[in-house]
Each structure stands twice: as C-alpha cells, then as structure tokens.
Length: 382
Image (cartoon, rainbow, N blue to C red; front, side, top):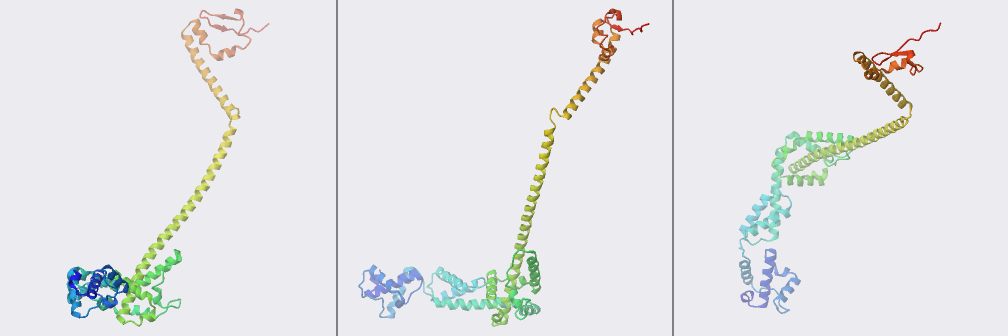
C-alpha cells in the first residue's frame, strides 16, 4: 500500500517514518528530528538503498501522505476541536489537581478518545500552565474572601512577629511533634489552642480539594517569611491559610498519637510492676509452704500430739463401755436367768470385787436361784 502511494524511495521512507511515528507518539514528527538509528532500521526493513533519505520535494506531497496516515490509523484532523476538548478537560481537572504533567496527560487521553489528531506538545504545555494559573487564582480569591479582616491581620502578623526562640511565628507552623513525654504533650496542647485561635480553617477551605490544600501548604512550607512577601496579598494569605489548616490537622494527629504512646507506656510500666508484685507474692507463698512442710514433718505417728490423741480415744472408748454396762444391769433385774445375769454383769462391779475375791469358794459368797453371785461383806475378827 505504501509503495503504491509513493513514486520513489525517498517518499516511501518518509511515509513509513510518519506512519510509525504517529502510531507510537500520536502526532507527526519533523522528519529532520527523527533519530538516525530509527531511519536506518526502517530503511533495512523495507530493503531500500543506503543513500535513500526521508525528504519531500513538495509540501503538497507531505500533506497528502499525512492524510493517508490519518486514514490508516482512523483519526480526524480538527485542531480547533482538539484544543477545545483539551481546554475543557484541563480546566475541569485543575480544580483538584495541581501538577502540569497530570493535567497534560488527562488532556491527551481525552483528545485520543475523541479520535482526533493531537496538537503539538507545546500547545498542551502552554494551555495547562495558563489554565492552572487561572484556576489557582480563583481558589485563592475564594479562600481570601472567606476570611474576616481580623483573621487576615492575624495571619499576616505571623510573617512579622518573632517567637520565643527568636524565629518568626510563621516557623511555628512547621515544627514537628517531639517525643511522647508529658511536657511535650502539654506544649502540643498549647500549640493546638494557639492554632485554633487563628480562626476556623475548615471554613476557609470550604469547597477546596484536599490535594490543592496539600500543594498550597507544601508551597508555603518550602518558603520562609521573606519569600512569601514576594507573592501577591491574596495568594500570600491563601498559602498561609492552607499551611495553618494542615498544621491544625497535623497537631491533632500528633496529640492522638502521643496520647496513645503515653497510655501504652503506662500500661507497659503497670504490667512490669504487676509482674514484680506477682513474683514477690510467689516468693512469700513458697516460703509459707516451706514452713508448713517443716511443721508437718514434726507431727509424726510417735509424737506427743499423736500419743495424746490415742489416749483420748482410749478414755472415750472406756467411758462408752461403762455406760453400756450400766444399761445392761438394769435389764437383768427385770429378766432372770443365769445367762442373762452373767452377760449383764457390768464392768465396774467386777472392778469393785478386787483381785483377791474373784476366785474364792461358796463360803464367802452365795449364789441365788438366779445364778447371780452376791458378795457378802467381810466379818471383822474378834
């Protein structure tokens, strides 16, 4: 197809370079700017002579070839419509985005989606820079108008008055939080109160994208008080206001983080003290158990305590036996019979007989009809 549309090696090489360049970059290059390595590669691929160069003898031929390339890739040539689409997309995105590269990339995507040939890069660059400046100026004016005259005066005072350490009050907005000590926590609380006294920054930033606030605050943070004086009054106040807003957010985050760290340190210390108390209590318990073990070892089976306990059991058993014998003697008087009398003889009666009387004959005692021996009293000698 390319060979049929051209009448020589030079035109063929030029047409192929424009086609491949457009497919790669989305625009037509200046043939003199194409690298020699690319020209040599395309020349070898189509087997053209070494002396063939990509040149046009007439502009009408180059214009005709550009039309062939657009037809091949399926795009239309309408620079006015492409600029209009690019401008609309950049202006829409510039409200939330601040980097020119991001704005240009979005414009390129929109033009390609519309099926139009891309304008030159310088066109996009100039357009993005201009629209970005206009949108940022509009945002700064909105921030300026939402501030009261007293608040504007307080913000401008930050660039003039000095802090206790000799630096400008403006530098206090940039100071990071220190370690999680109690004194630093109190100082951070005072800084938050000071920032809140400057004004309600959330009302100033109403409707402003978070990325814009971050970019404006970063621009103010990168400069110092003399550098900010070079800006216009409206932009200067807007940048300081964004830095104040970010400082308020950062101080609140630092307060929460410092509080959590302080609580964590207290919990860790409490756990350490609790572990020490537990170890002391365990030592006391182990000492008490050791003492009880020594005491229990002294209380053995042959010890005084065990002997006293055995003696008490024996006396209890004898007393119970004596009580049972008395009850049995009462039942013998009611029921006669030799067996009942012998079984019902109480133990205390035998004890009263004495050891010398138990084995004597009938002369010293009688048995009645019931078989019960009666003990006679001894007769004194004359």
